[in-house]
Every structure is written in structure tokens, then in C-alpha cells.
Image (tube, rainbow, N blue to C red; front, side, top):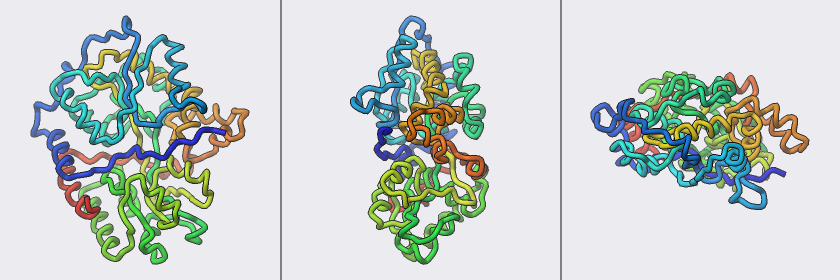
Length: 394
């Protein structure tokens, strides 16, 4: 039986307008000192003589041994294969918090002490705009070039994925209790039905919520506009005033769904896989209008001293055999479609069954409904966050 991952949020919520405004201002054109020119991003790479690297990631976001959670099989196999020692630090609990932790060093052209970090793509966009990350050398990454999912290859903020590589992906869709609701949910607009009054939750984070709600209005989220955003806010305000929405949540929506206090909610695909293991009545749907495909991505920050070692580690996790082992544990959308065949060939029935799970390997129909939203620009963020946070009550 595969180990079960605790359901932790990989998507930070915006906790205060003050922090949001500061981040938006920093990322804007009005603070040229924060931007780092390409020639100032790299230092001498000591990878050839110093066989190590430091990697910052989220808690419980890598495979561990069933009997010893301090052992990480795929990572230890990399160390044995390459002779590169990895200092793996589970220090990222929130995108904004981590930004605040390392931004002073980056804006002052100093090393963060980390060679590799994993943050959500909407935050990656800020780093790319600020020039705080280094371009990767694809000569060191043949697996990435060959196996990266075409759906994830060219987000608007990083065309060609030269500065970022997805670690794991996920889908923001709708979860609901089929037995208690007594019907199917197929559209975003179904959340506003009368039989769900007071039994719906939405995600509180601006970056986590807006795309799916726009898709419910038929918007192409790869090129949404300010008018699209304000239309969503108008809708959500109406639903709040008439009592349709029980509350806005972080990842604690899972508790409401399990308890039955909520019958339908915005949800992340990886969390629902875990919930279904205990309650098969819980369903996850990609609405007919579409759903947001997002990623938490690997980046090499400026002044990293072990860039080549980091590039080798990234490429190692794009080997389909390794990607399959990781996917079997974390249960998010695997960014390496070729890993599906590896899992399907497993002699373990539970492992082989994962190959047919569309929340790990989306099928053709589902893939047609998935899109990566364009990120909120620095000039938009302060205005949008102010309006959204007022509705949510942050």
C-alpha cells in the first residue's frame, strides 16, 4: 500500500493588503534598484569541485520511506548515482513568507544560501520579472527537454520554461459530496444553486481563486482582463450577501467537506485524491467550462554557487522512472506524462491503478479543459488585492 501524504496547502493565501502592496510595489517598474540585470545574476559555479547543493522545498513534498520519514528514496538514489550531497530543507510554508525571507539578499545582489527553491508559479512570475533567477542550461537537462508535459512548457511569465521547471502540478476545480448532494456538478455556476445555499466554500487567496471563477464565465484565462476580474468580484459579492458562501478558506476546506458542513467547494486535485481514499463519495470535477492548471516550480536563484549540480538534480527528477516513483507518493498532477507507462507496468495493483487516475495523469478530455492563467501583473496586484481581500474579509 502506498504511503498517504498529509493534505497541506501548496498555494499560499494573501494574508494582508500591506504585504501585498509592498510586494506589488517592489515588483513594479518604479523600483529599478530591485531589478537585477542579467550580468549580475551569476557567480562562479563551483559544482565541479564542490559536490553538493542546498534545496529548499515545502514539507511533505517528496517521497519518504514507509518506515523512516527521514529517508527520501529518490533523493538518496540521486546522491548515490552522482556523488552530489543534497541539503534538503523543508522551510517553505507560504509563498509570501518565503519571498520576504530571501528577498533582502536577492535585491542586494547577495546569495540566498540556496541553490534550488520550489515556489508556486504566480510567485515565480515575480522572481522572473525582477531578474532574481538564472536561466537554466538545457545541455544539462536532456530529460526536461524531452519529457516535460507540453501543457506546461510555455507559461506567459516564462516562455519556453528557461528559468523555471515544474516540480509538481495540480488542478483547481470543484470537489463535492455526490451522495449527500444527490446530483452531479458539471459547471462552476452549479455552486450558486439553491440547494447549496450556505454549503459552499471558496478559496480565500486571490491567486488561488480567480481563474476558475472566470472560466465559469467563459473567459480565456490565458488572456483575461481587468473587466473579467471585476465581473467575478461582483458575482462573489452577490453570493456572499445572499448567504450562498459559507466561508472563504485556506486548505482547511477539506475539513468542512469531510464533516459534511460543506457540500461543494473550490479544491485542489491532489487533496481530493487523499480524501477519496477514505470517502469515495467525494468527487472532483473539472467543469465543462474548464479549470486552472498550476504548478509549483523549481528555480535556481541568483548567486547560487552550485548551479550545474542543481540543473542535474532537476533533470534527474524528469527521468520517467524517477518521476513515477515521486508521483506515486505525492499524488499531484505529474509533469512527466511518460511516467504513466512506468506506473501502469507496476506489479503492485495499487501503484498500477494510479496510471489511470486522471487527477495524476489527466486524460485527453480533461486536458482540453485545462489552462494556465496569465499571472497578475505588479501594476494590477495592489488594486485587485484590495478589492478581493475586502470581499473575503482579510
